[in-house]
Length: 214
Image (tube, rainbow, N blue to C red):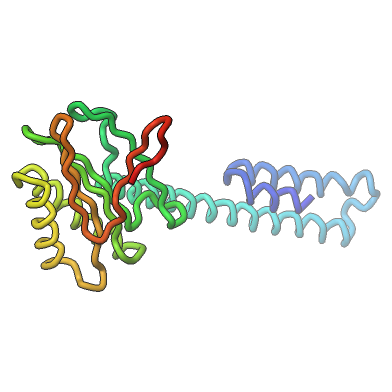
């Protein structure tokens, strides 16, 4: 009977665990009547064991629920922060259809050292795809710095090359050399595409049925 409350504490709520514990104590008490042991020492020991086990199970269930609630709050805060750093682009910007998919190497994380962003200016649509050296919170902070610089320079600068130079200037002053970032900056004006990239893999063009072109 005592095992029921223990199992319930692993998967169920505190209230349900308490209910199972009360039932196990009642069953242990009632068992004395059909085993003809009601009131003897062995019966009393079994009832006490069930009662103690039930209380421990309720305590365990309460602690587990508290930890899960705290983890849930922390997860929501982390997710909100990560989404503020790496915003999902709209499906359409100007004449471009945008699609993005991000898979972080860190388990349960939405943002790591990779980054992307798309901005629309009166004269062009500009984007950045980059990779920050490192991992964890340091990589997220560096990515946030690069994205913040791009969101400002992408609107203000007159060309893709000027945007890339502005990014290099900002990151060079703010980011440590050991935490550098590589990035590709693109600009789209009608059918014209301008691309500047610093140590980042060059883009690929996917055509059907021709395949991929570098």
